[in-house]
Image 1: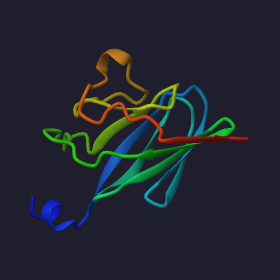
Image 2: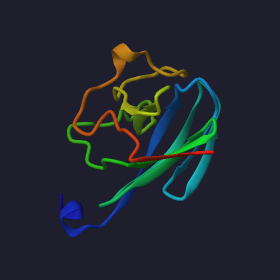
Image 3: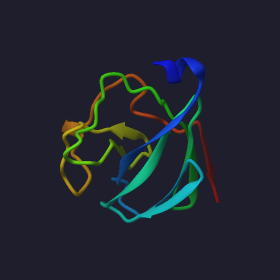
Length: 127
């Protein structure tokens, strides 16, 4: 709690699943990752006061302001996947259970309904 009150930041990792049906490029904390359809990649999840992310798919780029406080969400250390999130076909971002062990995107029945999730883009630019 001291870190949150003081406004500092720290890095944890996350696993991002792509359930859009097409490849996406993700820019998360100034690092980029290309994720094939129905695949996943590890990304850094920096806990700070503001977190912005960009996801590009098809001919559009989506900008998100990400909720960084995940109360009562404790990643499973045995899985070593960190925070598990998933980009959906409508480009919303959902939170997955801490114990999700699949290698492909999760079904909608497994998505968690938590404060701040699903995330929706704050803007969209298309060519």
